[in-house]
Length: 249
Image 1 (cartoon, rainbow, N blue to C red):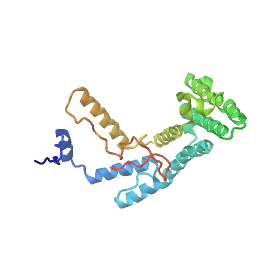
Image 2: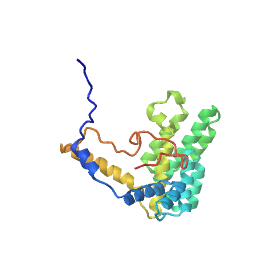
Image 3: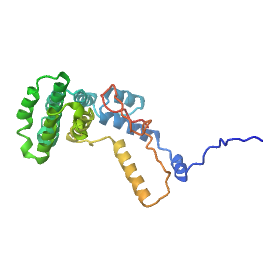
Image 4: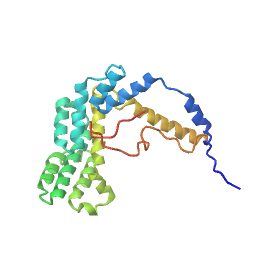
């Protein structure tokens, strides 16, 4: 008597079969990819892809490169250069968005404190910067004051003893968030959308799934977005602009 293990392919959920039946036009997919490359600041990839897909570039390469350079400065911790380049591009961006300006200055203070911690040396540069640049702005907004107080607390305790809320300020993720905010602000100032269309589609898809589950509409137990190997849970550094990987479809 022998036993055998079934190797039959599990039957697909009806919803998955319906999805398989829908074929998006290649032209639409290509347009989404080019839009992502352009909006997120991948000038080289955008130029190559627009040529290969026979699509008109959505922005001139110089404009994309400028946004890329500003983001790269933020990702590397060179906030002063990023602010100077942003002001050179359009001084009204930071003048009009006080919260963005404050967040960049606070990040610059974090970088100064990080340098102090690394060298174990003089903290006076961080104190001077906080007093001159952030001190006058903090009283204008309760949130600014709270953020400054939290940041200054980094000077009081060794990095390894910080509470999670304070330790998060030293996480490089703060740079990525700031770079994304600056990129969106530039795009909005240039009278374009604040983010790539595919990001909006992913948000809409998440909302639709949540609404369907609340109404007990039959769906598979897990629905992968399918944009990256681990559904965007992992983030890698991209050599072209220093932040998250390009979305692939």
